[in-house]
Amino acid sequence: MDSIQIPVRLHVLKYLQSHLGAHYFLSESDHFGLLLFQLLRRPLKDARRDDILTRYTGQFTVNFGSYDPDKYGLGKLTGKTCYQFNNFVHELVRAELHAWVDMATDHGNPVTFAIEQFMKRYKFEESDIAFDTLLKSWQRFAADRKLKKQRAPHLTPTKQLKQLEKTLLRIPVPTPAGMSSAASMAL
Image (cartoon, rainbow, N blue to C red):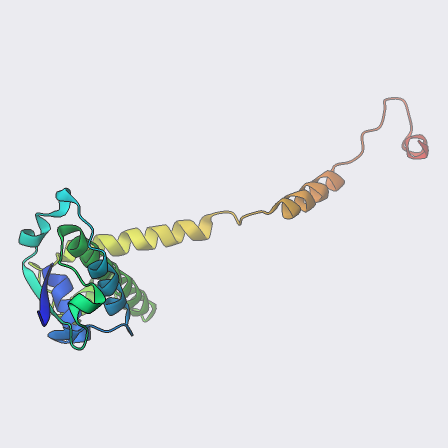
């Protein structure tokens, strides 16, 4: 067994081929290789994910190269393994999309134009991943980032104590009725 075919979603396949080429040689020096080593060494089993092997239509070829599967304990692919690998790469696609659109909008381009350019960069088609999916991902990211900026800063107990002390010092000291302010100061 010199290579293995990993079932992936079509946009994941195009992203991987853009970054790694059509045939990837397993390596421990990049994040894809490290993840594949861990997933293939201890294949996870989950009956709910077994249909993924037939549902994902793309096939990404991973050549083992100098790594002997028996020597390194590389097992078979399971549905859960493919699911986790696809989710990992999909999150990389999303992170890159957000950075791409963020940079494009900083330069004055509209969001829709930036997403179209991102899709063109990776040759994504509407059948691979829908434009609306990418747009919704960007909108959620932008809304979440806006909410994070509006949240109050986290206060440590020391900061809370100092803030309380400042608030209490601003409150005037109450004086008893009938006493002058000079007499109350003497007490």
